[in-house]
Amino acid sequence: MVELRDARNRPLRDLRISVTDRCNMRCRYCMPREVFGTNFPYLSRADVLTFEEIDRLVGLFRSLGVEKIRLSGGEPLLRKDLHELISMLALHGLELAMTTNGVLLPRYAPALSAAGLDRVTVSLDAIDEATFAAITDSGHTVAAVLAGIEAAESVGLGPIKINTVVKRGVNESELLDLVERFSSRDIATRFIEYMDVGTTNGWDLQDVVTAQEIRELLGSLEPVPPTHQGEVAKRYQLPQGGEVGLITSVTEPFCGDCNRARLSADGHLYTCLFASQGLDLLTPLRNGSTDEELLELIKSCWLNREDRYSELRAESSPSISRVEMSYIGG
Ligand code: SAM
Ligand code: SF4
Ligand code: SF4
Image 1: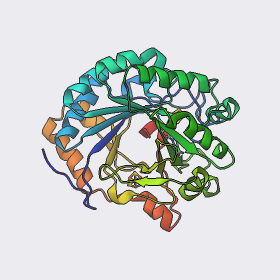
Image 2: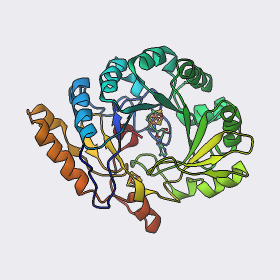
Image 3: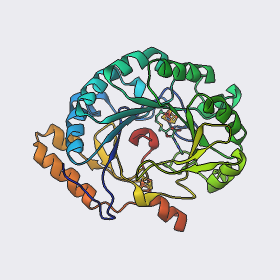
């Protein structure tokens, strides 16, 4: 196995794969309906990586040091026969996780678990149905997400984590309810600072509830040391037992340890969530490139990587074009 280090001496450990750019929700902060309507130019089926292509790339990334795969999207459970991809990827001996909005888990969790998925993170921004409806703008309910979490729990897709994006004036009042609901069940909630991913969500720094504000809202928290380098969330023990995490990319950036690469549904490699351009791997894959040629492309991309967008944002206010979260995966 090759130990790759980028230009800032960061290894490549974590690969997030978007399996579709489509979604059954229209979260305001991610895929606002006025932009992502029926006329939005979603990727055509022919432009999306096949399971065989994803599997081949995962094998190559594995040989470069990747230890963990996270499937994302869009909504990954909209990808037909996803369990077949999971059973292919399970043969690589990597940790296999997925981030989902959860509503399709009651239907698919048993097959996903049987195929070799290790665990899921479920996104849920509110317990109150009206607040949830206003955020997700899709007709889906909190009850459906909770049923999805139960389904995942019942087939052992744990430890489950909950992702909650916190937006000012929208769901700060939900945080304690979320913590109360999940901490007693050994499910950690991770509160995410609302980020300026993409260019369609009208992001404004004023809308970010800072990690410090979230800590104050939650009361006395005991920091838990990270289990590995590059851990995304800062973890805390709650006084009543259980854990919460804070993902502080806006106010306390953590680029120095960032070991994550992202593969878009159409086979472009992004070395930062806030990148404006990715490396096209789809074309060489389909033009008959050998594994060695593909490896060379990936290696030189990582070796030249200098990304530290969140640190730069904290220092100034960079204004550049950025890919959308639904395309690149969270
Ligand atoms: N559809 C799946 C879901 O929602 O879990 C997977 C894809 S979604 C893009 C992955 C994660 O990104 C979700 O937890 C979502 O809440 C988060 N996310 C999306 N837009 C965000 C933003 N502007 N700031 C912070 N997190 C965001
Ligand atoms: Fe869909 Fe997930 Fe984005 Fe919400 S956050 S719109 S569920 S991709
Ligand atoms: Fe990694 Fe880019 Fe996020 Fe920094 S801004 S932590 S480099 S993805």
